[in-house]
Amino acid sequence: MAAKVAFLDRVLAGYGPEAAEARSRFHDAVKEAVHQMWPGKAGRPAHLAPNIEAGNVVYSAVQSLSPNDDTQRKVKELATTLATDLGQLRSLLVAQSVPSVSVPILILLLSWLVIIFLGFSVLAPSNPTALIALLLSAFAVSGAIFLILELDQPFGGVIGISCEPMTNALNQFAK
Image (cartoon, rainbow, N blue to C red; front, side):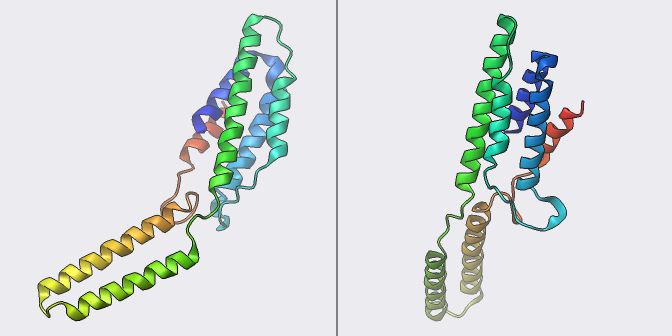
């Protein structure tokens, strides 16, 4: 997404000074989207509500460009395609931001695992090898559950998508 953002900015810059307003609206929309995805030090979770107005404003600004020659016509087509792709990516992020792990299933899974490990610990011989095997197995299963829960929230938690590529794209706007 960051690569498409940076490329669309370069394409609009290559269109000429007529695209200054479209670039400005695009920069504002990207800054708002980055602030929603990575709220920073606010300590709140990412909010991926679709800002349809910002996307429509950018798309309308690109569509309102009046090409003077074939080069600008091709650049406008490319900018329209990139704006559409970014809108699709944003919609996909919004659609996938809903938690997919069911709490009742998670509780059922954890109960099942507790019963299994309790049964193993009761039936296993009382020696250090069996104890180490049970501890390592419990650690591996709890690590797998942790990863599933972390990857279900890509913009928050301990493991999250880095904001660095989008920050770099925003920094390129200033240049």
